[in-house]
Image 1 (cartoon, one colour):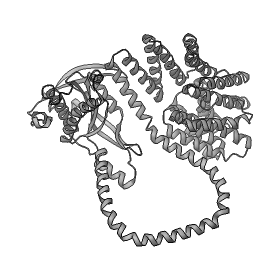
Image 2 (cartoon, helix red, strand yellow):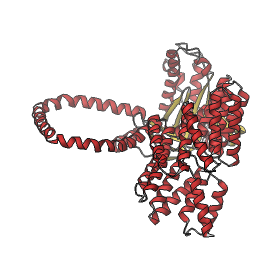
Image 3 (tube, rainbow, N blue to C red):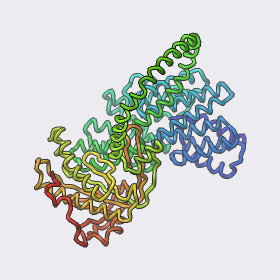
Image 4 (cartoon, rainbow, N blue to C red):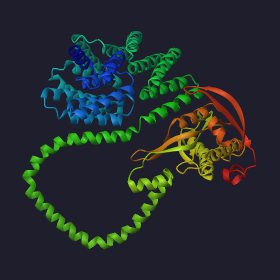
Length: 616
């Protein structure tokens, strides 16, 4: 039995690619039972490796990848530590966490350097280079994607591992398809197909078939392209490979959209989104939401497009800041490339070191003399400038971040994410904004947005709320952070009432004749995580289901009304008259109880919009 199991494991390991993985959930489930029945088996590390390869669920794949790293570290096996980080990088990439995926791949590369078998080392490093290239592809860095693809393929062409070479041809060809380099893509995909057929490995062929379909469609052969991609999707769904199936379904939606066959485009875009949501595929969810937003916009239903666009932004943000990600990734690769350059440059520097040292000494002495002479004058003249600039930078930082967060950033150079258990989040959205914006010049559009949002800013300042961000004509703020407040819900509802009151007031008191709008408001209370994203352009942001539910409250509100959730209602019912709307079916949330806020139970203080001077 042990010999049979060992042969099975070797075969499955051979089938496991890097970014194109021959996944089989049934295999993963069967081997998981074998492993947990006897975790101390001689082949335990091979078992964990194959389980991590064959899972189709990212969470489970990540769990077994981490378990493989843990057990391999205990046994001091660099080979399986490398495999664990390779699998971990793959699943992090599927979950959309590209920075951590890249770090996992670089760690795998470091472990590969420790391997004593030269052929095994080179084959492993070639495969890891392809994985790194694919991550750079997702980040949007073609320079380093091409660098690592070519580097990895060159290594693998000189090895005996035809399976990994075929996988590498596929991954590079897939990338060329996405870049529109169809001639090169076809050549690479054809090489991959021939090698897989020579090895009698059928599982990767639907991937190749799907990409051939995309190429056919790009060449104007839409019918052939659609039928080819559809065959690929059928095979992928049969194999429970939902990541690739979701991506190819979206490609079919793109083809139908190009033909202006919107009915079919909606069908395939919604199928893609459903698969992505079911299996937690963040990048695919983002892409599908964006496509559905574009489709609704294309048929003139902007109101239906907005919720999908909001979901796209939420998923895109959860993938993290790509600009910062690029900088981190580039630094790592630039360091590796620079090491080779340093080795060459070191030989040249040795020859000139005596001359350079003499020049440096003379230059330092001259600089020191000049520096001493000018030192006092320089200090006196610059101290005032430095103080002014420091004050300006401090004030600018306070306009971007809360005071407590800005202080932490200045003191520590970073801001730790923080969980807040009791926060209320507000979203607003204007009815008809897209229609109006199409008829306004850019200058008038900016003036209009500023007219309304400046007043919103004044209102939330009055109630000591925290502005989070604006997205187009949507406005988002929160109450109860960065300092906790027991009356967070009451404050944000008061602010919402003044916002609605001001928008109504602006219909008849609008000195610059800005467009008149109706506003919808949604509020939900609960737990969020807050932190700072970005490295150069800081942004204070919040995440969590509370944010998504608040956005849904706005979407299901009505013109001139404030729609609050059951949790918010429980906090403010003694302060405000509320009208119960019943349970309303919300996409991806089920049935949610909702309430309209009708007014104060007790008479409030006069609001901002009752003062004519505040509207100018």
